[in-house]
Amino acid sequence: MLASMRWTLLLIATGCAGFDPDNEPDFTGYSEELCTDAGVANLNINISDSETAMLVTIDGDDLIALDEIRDPDGDVVLNWNDWYTEKNYLTSAVWPLSGEMVLNWPIRGQDAELFAGQWTVTLAAVDARGNYKSGSCMNATVQSKEDPSFATATVNVRLVYANGVDEIDEVTNAVEAAIDRWTTLWEPYGLYPNVRITTGDIDPDLPYVGDGSEDIYTITMDSYEDEITLVIGDTIEGGTEYLGVAGSIPGTLTANTRSAVVLGWIASAGLDGSFSDLDISIMGETMAHEVGHYMGLFHPVEQTWDSWDACDDTPDCRGKAECESELGTNLMFPAPVCDFNDCLAQDQLSDIQVEILQRYTGAL
Ligand SMILES: [Zn+2]
Image (cartoon, rainbow, N blue to C red; front, side, top):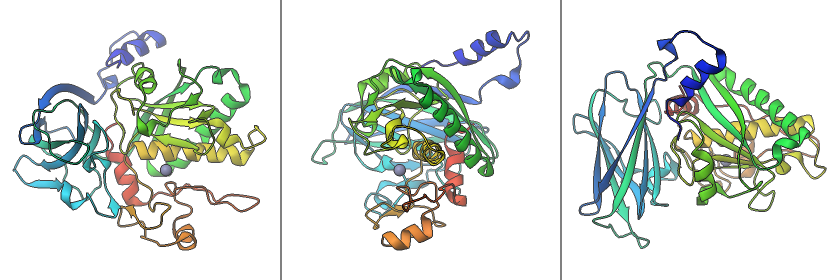
């Protein structure tokens, strides 16, 4: 990853004469190695007075899950057992899904705020049958931000066109209009996407990034440490089943095999291959939706209509009709809600959803 390079390049590009301390990123990170004893490893994190949110990324040889978080007073502020089988999802970190685990803390406003001292994140390594593994080693990266208000944030995004996609004018024009839609949609919530448009050497049939992909790891090595990577290709996994996919909930700001959001433009343009105003609007909503996952948001209700997010201000509806009526305009609703002519604008976020987005360590 490119760390402090960003700021140097900006000074050169703008011909700026002097060093402006206000331009320093309020964002830091470091890595260390840990190994489990009796199945768990403790990651000790020293938090200063000014650090307000942290992002922990683990890369382990075995399946890794969050066991618990303790504050500097020794109080447990999150225990896996409270969320592992809960039907209201708070973070995917409690599930041993892969060797790559990502945790942002705090998550909601009601969760324990960071305060100065040594925090402990306990991590479990388990095998495929769910048995704890001792002597299992992992790399831990801790990134943190200083953001005292959580009221407004710029979210830096590196948009990467896959091979050849940047040469299709209709797509690049639609993408730029979709970024405008995303910007308008986020503005009432104090969020601003700052998008840097680039190209990258990746096949335009993009991988399902939630399963992990070495190509995603390689692409995101060229992103800055405060950027979310958004890859635009033709299709995802050879088809148009998905408008977009986020690597994990939340996603990391370092490079791993899930460190991106992917979006296939053909799914947005529809069968005719051209972009209507509605297609562009949905593409902008998809960008905001998938980056919303990456910043920690679950769907307010999953399409099985029997599991929900952990936001008390999004209703736990049941059934398609009830959920479309109560949550169909929410940005994080699992699918567009359309009739033959039109689709609902999906641009609403609840107060607690906004709390989660603002607390994401990459919301600066
Ligand atoms: Zn989604």
